[in-house]
Length: 112
Image 1 (cartoon, rainbow, N blue to C red):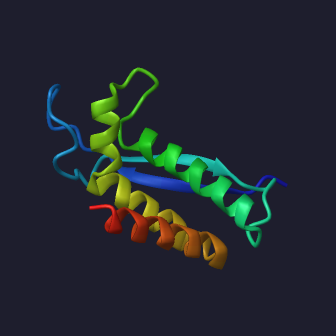
Image 2 (tube, rainbow, N blue to C red):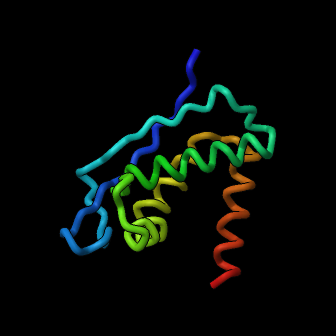
């Protein structure tokens, strides 16, 4: 049995030279993230899943293998990315994943 979570993101493309400035709610993108190989009560496996979710969110929000670092940075700080991650982590209902995700946010806030 293959377990997946679908990460849905509103894809916002405001223009060729502009990053994700607004969320277009009618353009949903979903990316399946497999995690049947992980034990979500294990901190290491939960961190692996967060990394997979992050990569999927980046992809759903417009990042590709050819994206420039500045664009990747911008997407990683966008509402699209943050909302996608928030929804995916909440949908999992896995306490360890949620705990690690919350810690990431606290660390990011502390570094600003």
